[in-house]
Image (cartoon, rainbow, N blue to C red):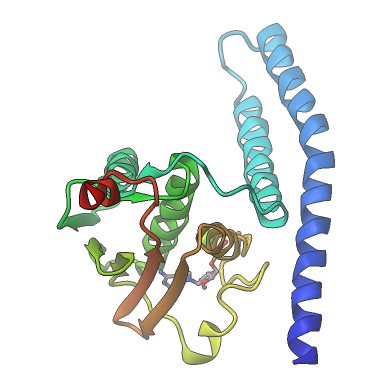
Length: 237
Ligand code: ADP
Ligand code: MG
């Protein structure tokens, strides 16, 4: 029990540190990006020098990490504007499809409902899906045709099942999956999953993972049905 409490405090401290540092990095980074853009306009109007693109993409990478840090520490308010899970999935998969097809991957999605509202903003839910889809993509080994499958069902909660046929995760790694900074990738941040879980739990949901090495991984996300959702108000009347 005491260990649990210490772990919670440690988690909060890490989150706070990350968020504060991120906040301090954000402003100077924005100004550096602006000045690099100015320099490029001044010295490389025709885009001859590849270094500018490299600097920009590295700055954007830092920005990305810093953005995840911010999400980690700051438990953003529960959205009072529910979003439609089905619409967000359609939007996100549409957005990511081009990249997937480029890598010879297939992405399937199946829905039993036209719309399902949950108390999470469109942007947050989109971030959750992007984090999970990105991981699924990165888990497909070289030479295997990736298949990623999204299914949405309504039980008491909205249940989103996201399955991939990637490398899978070993039993002992599974426990550490949601720890901040836990990564097995050379350039990973280890922030995608903790941020994802934070956002889901904040909305009153949960996330669990099942995995078999060399067969694939399944994430199961449960999200509550939004109180102000049209699904409920239909039943009320
Ligand atoms: P990152 O992607 O930056 O490593 P994440 O928090 O998103 O950080 O993921 C943490 C780790 O969990 C990954 O490094 C990887 O080892 C493992 N992981 C996450 N999703 C999957 C998946 N779909 N298949 C296999 N391993 C996964
Ligand atoms: Mg990730």
